[in-house]
Length: 340
Ligand code: WQD
Image 1: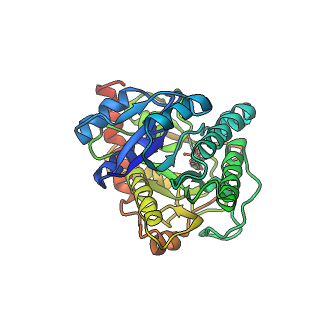
Image 2: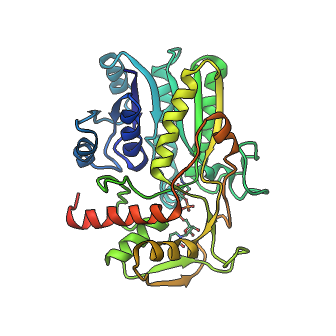
Image 3: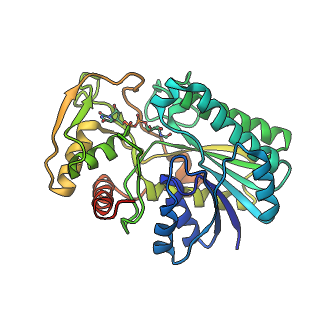
């Protein structure tokens, strides 16, 4: 059974990917420093898959610990690297924390596994596109100057990975550019666990629906869009997780070599207000929202061209907005009854 290292494997996307790896017959090994996740997620995962995946708690920036890990787990055949700080606003306040953590962890992984034939999947982001000139945005679109240090760490990481493949330090690498991951596993046992006040739209919606937040502020309705609010490509986290299995399988085939990049979205854009109405439709709950000022750093509209992922990754998002909203709500209700 191929053993896959999943860094950040107790996080939102990481935990859902652990489930899909097991479903696909892989053996995930998790490293997580619990800086933005909870150890209890391991128990939640065991309720879904029937056993506790192997878990190591340490910071990937500690190279000696990573070297020790590699010796303890010698037969890793693939790495899915999620572990990174990801709060756009925080990265503006504390850029050095983001550059240090997000880049040192990647460099340590590439150094410790240098020259090994380990397939590498990198968690990248549509933030590398900034505000695209053309929509839907394809993987060939020019990478725009990052709007935040967080987005810059993703851009720099992609450049590092490309160079590592050129030098032979890394053999096969796929960067997956996520659009907006939302929703939760259909068991409602894992999902998004924002720390403090949610920065992202959907967890803010579910927390306001459950009564933890008084109201939702729509950050601007004066954009050049259908209803004036921003457009994003929201994708169910389970669809996103399955794409990581597809990426491993592509690299296991002899049709793949070197480095490549794939968009992970649905190919459709929805406005903020459309998401609010979709949540109300899916749950029957009336949301309390108001229109507020724009949020600095927001791009007006972005959604992905996913043709390349469909054709070459042999992957397509299947789950629609309604199940994205209903699954996110089921998870919020689970949390209200079972605080983690
Ligand atoms: C979505 C829309 C807000 C909160 C995220 C991740 C980023 C990257 C891309 C992975 C925007 C609006 C939000 C609220 C609102 N993913 N909004 N009221 O900014 O697209 O970025 O996806 O790398 O890491 O953060 O997502 O959910 O913050 O915002 O009106 O209370 O919802 O203005 O238009 P964003 P988001």
